[in-house]
Image 1: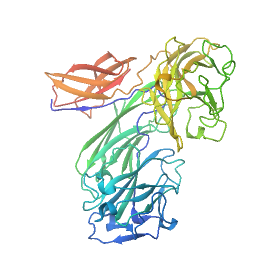
Image 2 (image 1 turned 90 degrees about the vertical axis):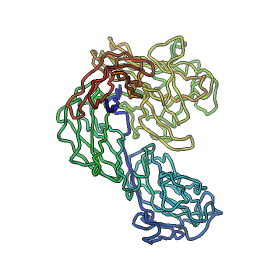
Image 3 (image 1 turned 45 degrees about the horizontal axis):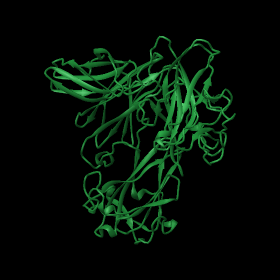
Image 4 (image 1 turned 90 degrees about the horizontal axis):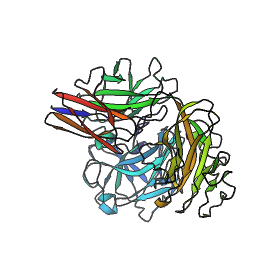
Length: 563
């Protein structure tokens, strides 16, 4: 066996959702193309200095303003850039392509805006000691990409602008780049003058999906200096070759798209695989992902109308042990807040439009201390009998807030969930503000059967006092499923390692102990279907390891599916 290509398949209990990067954007702007270029900046046009500048032009400061620390010397010093329309509420990292002059640490600082649409700045100093994405020091000849700001929220993403300002007169700036936060950025990706041909697969998502089962299926590829060869694109959907795919190229991103002519099967996980080739170079790059098509999730806001004390009180929560509404922590009391969270009355899966912080009409329930707060019981009635997937919704500001939740009122602590839990899915972000950037997570709790519509779906909720972190509860959700479909794994069964020994291939993948897993393979990537090698493999709590015989072919391709 000469090689093994590893694939990963995600099985998600989330309706119409692919876990992965929902969008991939890189916007590169030449420094001299500011819509407003402050008077302290000068454009240097010299084809010999340096040779690798975009259009051989860059900007630098006329004067030293080293007494400045956090605000521009004057509004007229600011360079303002029009970034355009990015993805709403997505977060972006800002990179600058720069060079530090002969003055070294006396020439190496500038001011950068702390967000889009703002005149608030922060200083970046000591850049002379930084290393660029190309591995070279920022004082070395030529320009070098470095990260200047992280996780800036695009908000409504319409006509965004961003500003920088000078501080010392030896910092030469060639270009700026605005990149989806967390993308694996390299020098080749951001620098079109680099002759290296590279392509990175960064995920795919069926955006605009509906419960009718006709989602828009899209895969994204980050291009380096070369572009994807549009004549060499292959997509398979559930193992069947698709001929009528389309592709487009914008801002270093090649998007491969397909909309099925017929509805896909509901209550099923579907698998897409996209292979592209670069031109020149004929480097093959694969993007493999899956998505779940099913009925929509109904959201239920947690309120005192549907929430009571679990086991300890038959009435509303405010009877006996009241919610408090002030900021003062009252030991084991939950604090009811109306300044944050999903707008009361929301019944669909929440989106950014359903959260307007500090405007009133919201509700979350917050535990404020390490004390053990009372367990809550929230109920929701459904119109039809059958099986339902059940979810809880929690917030986290990036510091590890958690939630205890379950479908049974156990005498033990309920299962604890955080943003890093395998069945936690990030839905939307709000901020940043003085509390940080808040992210709403949906957590899959399990499946319950409702045999009588007079019997509600019941969810138990509590804090996790031993962690010392806050708990922000916002709601629960439920989703009807086919009664014949057993619960499926919610964790992405990514292949973590693969080894070959004495004719046997051993694979280790991320797993959980519900459902089963199947090892699939191909010996020809262009084959229409994957073939199962071993089925019915029980999953471990965190990882599973199993082995299959090697086929003996020169190339063998593997992926794991959850059932």
